Length: 360
Image (cartoon, rainbow, N blue to C red; front, side, top):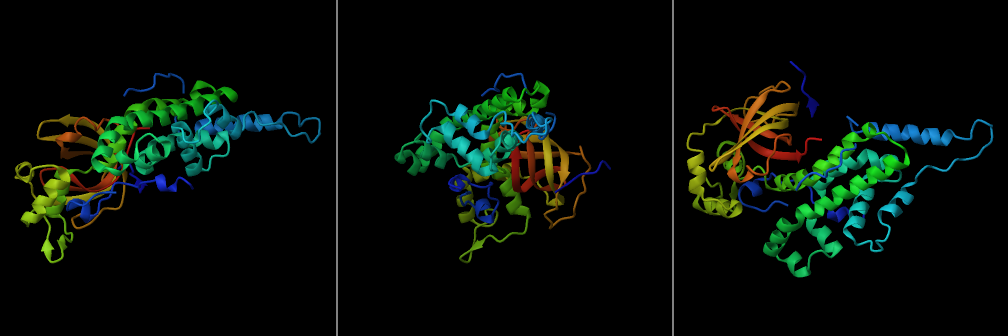
């Protein structure tokens, strides 16, 4: 992807991105408030760069007399880790498991690597890779009965996901605050990390769910209608636009009546162009029938093909329609990276979703 010009033990806890395979389209299964802390660099590396400078200064102390003393680091990662888990003897506690996931995923061995990876852990790993079920099983937060029953698990996950992700956000904030205090960082040195931790409490659960549920029934139906893709299985066409069996599978997979889909798409026409890229949501307009999402282009990717390519300028707007159920979850500022097709009505639909991320 290019920017648009202006003209371990825990490997099994990673679940991967939302699947966009034909089996998903045809009905297969795909694999709060902000923290009120007003402390906390305009970019990802600023706080870590400042921390490196402070560590370098500390290492230089005592070297002026020509002796070979080695100064002790201000704070080692092991010391910081002990502070974080003090009084918590169990390595199976939610905090300890999140900390181990963080360490293993980003090879955390020092405060520098910790501070520089907090935003990535929150905005990428916890949304795209984190496996909530395995986490709950490992931490003993859900019984085997709940873990093994899809219906019971879904209800449990809906009720507890936000609470569990808030533990991770709070842990990351404690890490950042401990490092800032130990190395005497100024508020502006780690402001972006602080803001990300605060926003994560509200944004992470929404992005986590969107990553796994988008593009949704309306977009899947349009993709199946207009895009060339194999839908025949065992000699039977399972495309809902072509078979009754396909309609039944689609209805079960998306929990929607096919007649509703036909009514919403009655005026559709085939796509006039396609494009790929990352867009920021500028406005969400919800209604009972569907949700209209206004977006602006940020980065351009390789177009998916099958229709003429549209070249986009940075900031150029598009209009995207999704199921009405997404109206309360999508928010201005969220970033959507996907393959898109634009119909003659100017309305776009997604054929393949890559990522949904917060605004930081």
